[in-house]
Length: 345
Image 1 (cartoon, rainbow, N blue to C red):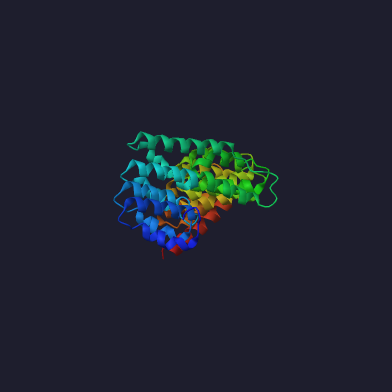
Image 2 (cartoon, one colour):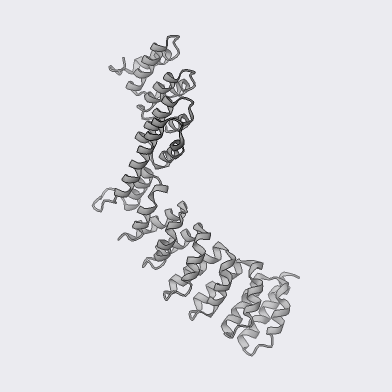
């Protein structure tokens, strides 16, 4: 019946799964797998609750031959009490799973059964080797580069694709670089920090922005490397770095950002003031100290930022600045005092 593959036999074969004779159960399960009809998926999944390991193993094998079956039954079977069932689950995940499902095999590396461990290790190693060899075909005219990259990620999994994605940050196609930066931010691997900082220098503004967003998502591992390039000769890099540090909100960035208030470019100074504002009360004391900087631009921007933050604790210091030698600093302090008083009225 399985070889004839007549769909009329599906219902009688499903009934055979519940026969009192185990041998008939196994023949029925095997035949359903050969036919591959989607109606068999639900009863075969129910058969995975059998008290007999061999029925559970045969059911998994049959499910692996039906296209409409999802990967979930195989993942769930990794926790089966019997090593024969777990072994079959590992085999099927390796055969049909994508990168996201294959990662579940990592926990099987500690399985009590040696054969199960060995099969899982073999599949994971093969996946890593495949990841290292995959390249985006340049002559594929039917699919967009983004589509091809998505297929690669689905195949090997995002966590295993970090090295490839880092390589793609240098791809000729800006759409590939754009997506590679975006996914690296989603993965959150600190190995991507330096490559993403280099991507801030990309000639494409969209890639620059995505790299900045990715560094923001990486958070703490990005802070010191970002601080180190606060004075990069590229204005766009300085702007992106300042924005990223403000959005991350790590206290270590406050003092370096205050120094950036001296930047020669007015747009960079503006971005710095906006970023410092995001730190809120944590930035008040460093900004009050900055009111005594030699550079009047720093004093001016520090006063403006204190006004934006709006905490009355800065009022006394700002009032002292009303006697500053520079008219722009005095005006900034005056406006800041008005803003704070208005916010706290």
